[in-house]
Length: 131
View (cartoon, rainbow, N blue to C red):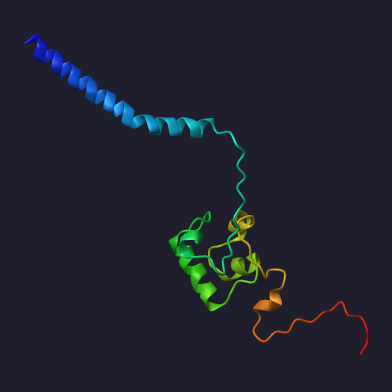
């Protein structure tokens, strides 16, 4: 009876050893990852609300599904020219929310609002020569 218990005990040790050996590469990789102190720089990603997908816009603070639906409806009507344009056109998005979004959103043509006006023509006003 004692030899049978001894065999059973050795069998359990074999299972435990096999589990440890199987987990060793995982533990080794985890340890290597912890010891890797190389500097990592993450570039901030700015979101263009005129083209961003729904899922990305939902990551903005203070923008729930209802406000997102209003933002998308306004975007479909006409592209946003600036953050102030979003504030003006989207109900329940006010100055506080715009302040939170200021560092997260990027409207490429914000400095060129004429780009959003249908039929508009850009004129160089720095030309001072008379015609």
